[in-house]
Length: 282
Image (cartoon, rainbow, N blue to C red):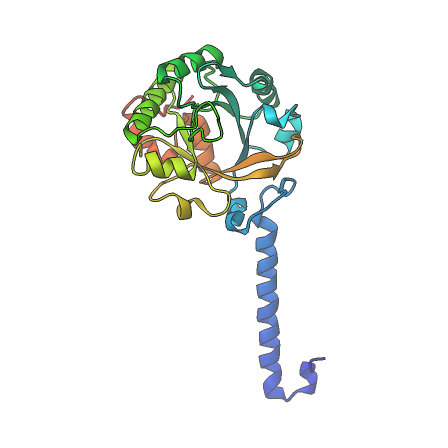
């Protein structure tokens, strides 16, 4: 048991009290930080990774979903503070996610800002894929910018191959142009570590990027890539969704997010893209 200051010589008492006061202040600061570090305490992660803990410090979080999440209670998703949802729409040139329209309208009714994403299938032509996307995804001016999901299809027995970089990049650029022409909004590129290294590193800097990194911060996995959205876990828990769901963080502040919602552009790209007729307030 430590000695109380009153039992110590007078010269020592001040030092002991000073040290205790400093320790108490440090603990209070840590407690305050711990209390504000996670903006979404009702959300969780079944398998949290320490390498992505800082994602909780970003004030704007959202989810991305597909048929695999099953029926979603979008009112509960919104009540949990979810700021955005990206919903799988199409894949390749002939697949429509079975729950796309259900999720699209459900999120809209609940007031969750939502956008659609297309998953690229490298064994179908870029034109076929964009024709399919435009046939199935509403051109809704209130929606978030569309997302082009570019990953290799190694999981698919039908299309396990990787294309040469020049061919994959050309297809990607074509689909981005078609998405922009259809929606009037600069699309977002979603990608993973492998595809980025093989194809995107050093390319398409004038597009916002959404990167997947579930074991480390994006800066540690994506060389010289400025990201806008970060998918930091695939084992998230969010009220209104049964089971695992991808959780994502926006890079910036609430004010920057408001700017994105108002203009459909990454605020860091405003000056450049305004000259192209993009980024005007809705």
